[in-house]
Length: 198
Image 1 (tube, one colour):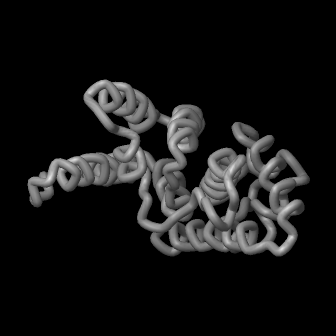
Image 2 (tube, rainbow, N blue to C red):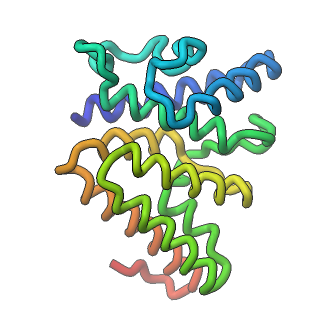
Image 3 (cartoon, rainbow, N blue to C red):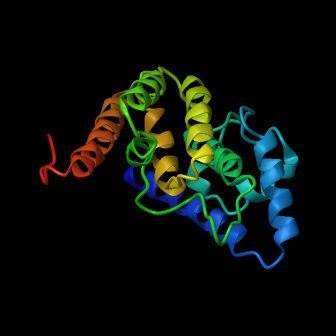
């Protein structure tokens, strides 16, 4: 499983790098617009997305029976949500995919007061306690909108890993535990107590 997780992450990283490094900004923006239309749709259902969501995807992550694989779902979901997050922002000057901005870490940055904490935590809880990738993705879209509204980036290759692992019921709790640690680790640092709460 670790090998597939890495391949999913590397593929998403490569595609985002390809988009943000494109010398043809108009074409890159057109691709982002197409990706946004793919939000909530099944991987492979939109031929105009095949080039970015399937072209070059490692064969071990592709379907053998016609149904989308966990890898295809993780890639498709991460890239379409990235396109939503990046909408309206300059891909070079204001990149919305940044290393080390994991889901819990980025969501913590939304919190300025107790009211924010209640609101964000309630939405994060709804996403984290989802029982399926479809339900999780639905809640995640709302969280991405919150991050977008504050220009807070997210590590999309890392999110792709989470999306992949979240599809395995036996791995879900470890993903949730990591999110919780990230969410509260930042709080400890912000409060300046110098200690990370366990």
